[in-house]
Image (cartoon, rainbow, N blue to C red; front, side):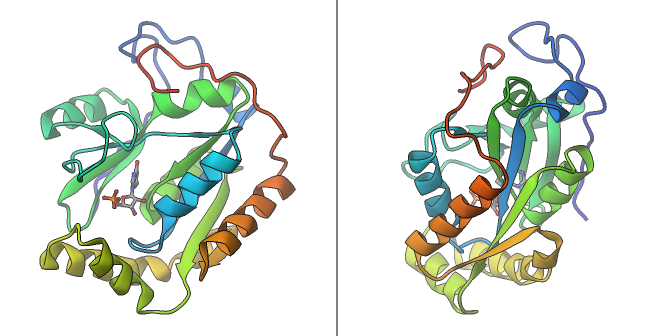
Length: 230
Ligand code: 5GP
């Protein structure tokens, strides 16, 4: 069973940047959250990269993780890479909107409130790329979030991509595939499902979903507490 914590209320002083003058209620009324999920190997990261390049009004939330960086991944860009003790300290301090241990309890992943709430309060559209459990937690707080599940076009696609990526050990890959099989059964919980048969088509489908959901043509300047990545 994954372990989760709730943020409760954002408290002044929770950010390293000093007192924070916003709250979740305010955030609910302003910007919009977009959640993109899908099993490991389905191509979410490539889709997200394209969406962010084409739609500058979408602001990515950089998750925190205890997983070690892969070759080419940068701290603060791909993830906030945290030591397990640091992650636990921040979890205990209520700094996460949601967090859980993915893939056989091996590593923690979580969405920092500081990545999301101030940007929503500033009217931005913030996009999260998180797993199914994380999505369900986020929906409890932000029921109006736009949720999109990316599915493989055929069952072997995930294994092929994970093998091609070559970043996982055989054990880690087996764990990811097992979780992927379970996640595919949760696709019905999402408002939208997009099949990633072809990157262009998948990106276009998601753009259409976002435009229909009211994505503005341009974004207000992102406002973040100091220390958060814009
Ligand atoms: P990876 O290790 O391949 O970067 O990511 C593993 C999984 O963790 C992906 O399915 C990804 O969506 C999920 N993930 C990444 N960040 C978060 C997060 O902040 N919260 C949750 N719940 N899942 C996350």
